[in-house]
Length: 366
Image (cartoon, rainbow, N blue to C red; front, side, top):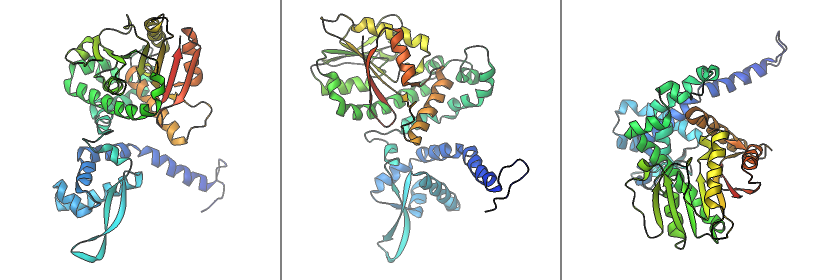
């Protein structure tokens, strides 16, 4: 490749490499749209139910698309395979033993998209890639110059996300299903962290939604009294068990008393001032409880300011930071930013541990 210098002192090969990087990111929206196509077409389930790698012709037949679109399906699957969603393997068909044919197999990523299985994240794809919601990101330029506190979401849809969800039952279902699917992953991670619940007799899952995590805790620790605390309209028709109950209320006003309070992916929705208000209410809820030292358990993202995370993990965290910015005016925080919050509410005794690939477990002792 040519490496001679041009007028501004940049080498030609740097121009060519820069162009590749620029085009890669400029067309990155195709990653999301091809993923959405894959989930909408139910392809992970189709291959899963086939119980073996599936050829292009078998897939096209099952999708019931015109044969004229065979090339289109091939190109979409080739791209998704390049992204790591499928493996392309070679198999022999029973009636053509002498011929090898390409077929698509699920990878550890696309197995997370098989509906009806444990740890399925397809509902998260449905929510995040819904075209109505994703218009928020078209407003970033307007938002950055805005003097007010409106989110890009509100600029795009004329209302904040919570009001929008309350008035649109279909999108509220997307939201609830997505948060429930994420909670399945959290439950899997918590299997290796049972020690954080030792000695506890009660716990409140604040803004716990339908109670996916609380249900897991109540079943795994039968002695533990679990309370799901959320807005009255969220928990209105939900039924508890012997050690699981639902209480409606507002976390900014008060939180039920317990040995521990759980905040799973909650604080990133709020700015620092509101986080401090929430943490103060949590502190009140766990203080002076049966002469025992209560604690606040936070499951959230900690952006690695020491740059020890893998680049892909850091990218996922930074992407989620932009998501909560666009939807809620929230933020993902670094260790120093978390420390600042805890100091503001006089909770300087805390511990941060890794939980999942991009989530951390934070234990705070008021």
